[in-house]
Image (tube, rainbow, N blue to C red):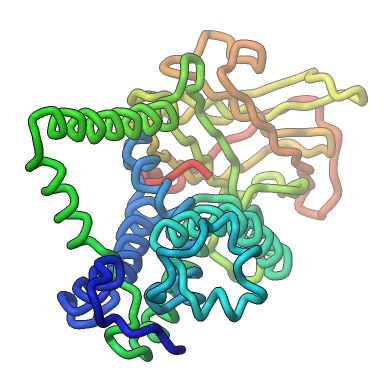
Length: 388
């Protein structure tokens, strides 16, 4: 791909050449993109437990800027041509160029590159969501809309196109490679602070206004409004086919009387903006034909340790019923702090139920009228996790 000569006094072209030379021709911006995507993706998707404000501040560039920037870097690896700054704005490109090839030969300026990065990111995110959903359907991995898979796909997309962009940029002569004109910006900023006192004051007010606006927007996005606090509760089991990943229950569970059932994992996520203590009461309930509870027996109580904000507490256990029947359910009642003397769905903070069929040793469901049972504890743990 050819570029116009950079000889002469064109400062716009010289600033790209000087910045590329200062980095020995290395694509420093794309190296920063790769490092940022990997580090921030690891913090959000793997480590977890970050405050909401920090997650939003770190995640917005990863979501709304980097996917498009990496793709644009792949499509346009070179610096703008000598005539780039003499052409019209991005909104008039269609009037100035007859084909996409002529636009690629001309190159794009920094402002156009940033605008395209934001727009392409907005276009790319829904497509990545469709890919995640299709993959989950094909491989039967359960709900894909959790923080880990989403962040992993996003980071993989950014890193892949950033690496391709690095390869394409390094294939060009050093003088034709795009580079972020950081040196030019620093010189321009320094010049703005070295003028008259009035100019210095105006520039300082402008910079401060931009910082305040950015901080205000980040705060508005990151800090929940009044009432926007919640707790997620889920009942999980191991996926089929030897997959150890935990997935939500989506069908009735069959248990055998007087035998320990399959492990059930109770998961509670704290998004209450403060550390919480939870109590979960598990009941085995018998239903009539209309679905009304006609008998209940408490199977177990689980008391959590103090769960920090944006953390997940899990408790694995097994149920050993001593009744049989086909109109039974396990109901889990969640309470913040201590439950009342008579726990029911009406006074619970949250409630989940799991439909169960309990059969005798010979595989036949009975109709005993008393709901009773016992629980065998599994492991209890408090682990990092994002809401997803």
